[in-house]
Length: 359
Image 1 (cartoon, rainbow, N blue to C red):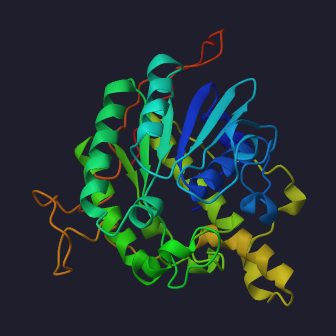
Image 2 (image 1 turned 180 degrees about the horizontal axis):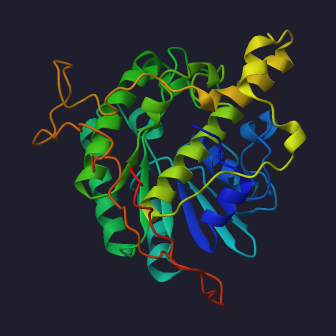
């Protein structure tokens, strides 16, 4: 998959209000989107590691973070917002998919500006910080959250549920506080089970599902040493997956990106022939080539068949058979999607799918 460019992202999200809900990984998803709307640069290591800063790439810390108390507990809050002349992106840090804090966020949506797109994930904190018997509570909270979102958000709002990315066998860092170190060896397996519940419920409520666990199961070299977070190349790939998914759901043809610096474009063949010697050269080659690699074609939802001992969840979901399956994408239309937050409405031509288009 080719990387998406700044011009493509800017045109696709023109006059759109995007909301990102989730943990530190989703915060990096928000940061990469904000950076991509302004330039083709990648996030730095310092930008990926920092949290609660007062400003990041022209955005604003609205609530929590360094305006409040910095900690690694479940009561940590952080609300960020980036606004330009034609883009509005907001981030809410979550430690639980449904709580009193989530009810306050839903009240913001109900009484204020309605988003055009919502990107959400909440899993690792839910299954590790609230007791070992998390399964029933997590499923109930997911159902409450999806019910409220369907009630509050308008029908033309695109909601994408990001499935949790693969965790490492050894987890270190600030996330793993001493109270939950005993869950570290089995946490990656709990995430797989929680991914099944999240995807099944999102599908039942007619929402879009993006299986990041599937996409990155063979890209583990992009995961950082703490076993939880991912590097800048991985997050740029996530942005490409998200924006191409959104373009297909809205019926928008992205086209070919125009290179900002033709002299800097390097073909894949010379890079493959010349072996990088230094670590810096290896990172540069990795950033240029990781998007071109495609894993073997497999069923993205492995839970439909076989004796894998999957948890029972009501009736068995049908097993998708091809790219036309409605399990991944629920909204796919060619009508004009225009819900700006700006005062003046610009007349734009209707974007329709070409006859040869296939998802």
